[in-house]
Length: 320
View 1 (tube, rainbow, N blue to C red):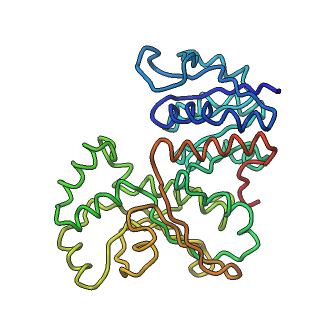
View 2: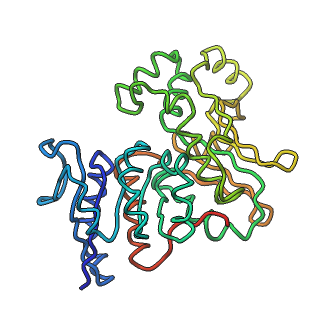
């Protein structure tokens, strides 16, 4: 039985569920001849109550990063995790993350690691619904044409509540009370979270070095009840849509509210879930839909990445 040492950055909702799922899947790791040993979990407050396996080593000292074979980044944000990961990346060891903001905004430092197959990030877009895996493998053989996607659960919730008659402010307040939206909620409702995810997707089908600042972003803050009702009268629904297509020979990426027919896949398959419509010349139109947020949903993809790493599969390699 081989011991693989794992370190984790952050232990919020996702981090806790990753630790619990690793323990729950111990038999699967054993079938691979592996025992996972968590050697450190970096947190701000070791005394805070958490739902994690007994004996998990919580610490405020990142020194354990130097002794672990794999790092799972679950702290969120951009600058702090990048500062923590920078020395570790230079050693060429693998990293598993769900951090779309980090991937979108720090690509200059992460790209070589990704090209070397050492960066695993299925959970960064649509959480446990696998879209990055197919786009980074089998769909490469098909000529990419276009994608449309609903990628932010907070905006989806707010717009659905508005369809039920609530105004934007009321729907937003409910989303914050339920923990769906941050305070302030700009990252979600401003479209920036969706733009981060679209940037990640674009690197698998358009340009392996696609930059975040190329995405045109408009949020849902100015969508009104009048807009919602006018769309319903036309047999349409308003969604915050991420879209990538070639216009005049150049890739254009946009995030903005769109009024779509009620029969559109983003309104049917993605009625209350994240969804993506992928169009390729040879593969045709493909529809992906499922849970795009949540602790255990996200953890399922991150632990899946860990299993891929142990089996010997490379991480998610962008277009060269």
